[in-house]
Length: 447
Image (cartoon, rainbow, N blue to C red):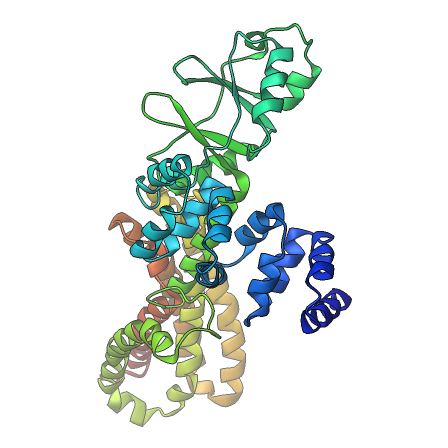
């Protein structure tokens, strides 16, 4: 790879375009996309323009949205090259790209498409933002049940070149309603004179174009398919969604949830390229909100001022105890958010999980109580029982907060990832302070 980069640099330096074009043609699209993604100068557009037509389409689809936008801006002066690129792109990749652009720019680029591709682009963009319709491609192969296997293969050879996948062939009637799907292996092994209808079992899995993309993720998890057909409410085959498109959505969902769990108001794609003020805006809202929440911890502490003055050693164990509750809560919240997101856990399962979480939290708390008791026996023997009891209760409380918050947010039709780690730890901190000093007040008889 380093030798290849060095050779590219040398050819770019000496402007040996023909040699460079031949060299690029010898390498795979993933490697070329990685090199162009790294560059942030005029050489990126030179390299991109020297790719052959097939490479251009493949490399562009592998670039980040930010880099795609940069490439498009630089290609706008070469309208012919831009038109070829956008027309050659897979409809689903093109739709995803247009979604990331400001509306005016997207509309401008749509006008560079051929009439046929304009219609396809507009149809896909008309579906709701997070619907399966936005993910699908219209590049698929469909055959008729009355065709022979030999006729089906002739049709596949004629129209299958641009299909996103040929692993599965779809069977439709004269109204384009889906009848069944058949794996290419079954067609290959069948007799050439056999009718396609004889190979069908009429058991297929399909998606509805208006359904949410998360439903597609769940179905792909349950069924071992490389692609699934997308239908309208009348059962007409509109397109297909492939596994790689779903993986892109899963990655985006994960990134979005990760940022929410870290208390970012919006996702940050690349902190190196993000402006300071934008980074500030995306982080400040939650942090300010949490400042006001943590005031309650201070208020709780001030109410136990007499107790703290009489037993100063209590303060030494305060950070340890409340952090333990927050950490246990964050663990529990992370587990629940993931389980809710991928469908392992349903909203109605909350009461079953509480029983299990109480058992786990008590075991965790008891183990951690032994550890803190050992430390306290050397540091402050007079409060061993207080810190031990507190550890068990704060771990139990933090775990239940972390468990229940994602369910509460889901019930309120909010994203469970909003039950972020700082929110969980802030609530655990407040409850931890109250629990700790309440137990100490009871134990020492100080009000």
